[in-house]
Amino acid sequence: MLQAFLQRIVNGGGRISREYGLGRRRTDLFLEWPLDEAQGFLGPVQRVVLELKILHKSLEATIEEGLTQTAAYAEQCGAQEAHLIVFDRRPGRSWEKKIFHRTETIGGRTIGVWGM
Image (cartoon, rainbow, N blue to C red; front, side, top):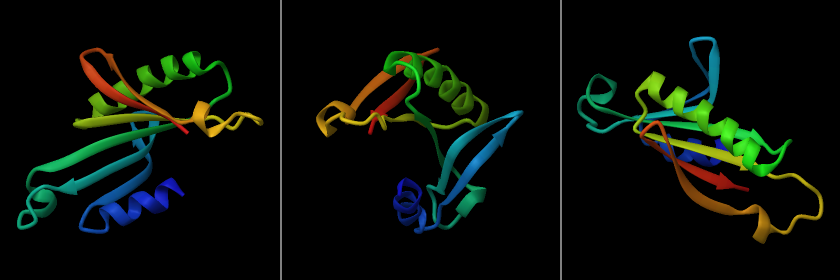
């Protein structure tokens, strides 16, 4: 669902790379779109890293691990934005407890952390 939603956003000339290889590791979704339509991808490009995690450990352990990974990916590809999305599939959890947004800073980089 998330990829389908994002595809509609970048249909205006951008692109989504799934499992984008960065060295030996891979970020889940890497979005790029040109900031100058005339120059396309030869001009300035907006880059965004999205790292997706399914909650297996505690929420804080999942976020801590994911932040380090997301920051490294963003640094490697020169992304201006980075987001960590944690999916909580535990049965019986209300949407009010699953859904959240906050920002975290790691190594001078701000990362949006989203719970779903």
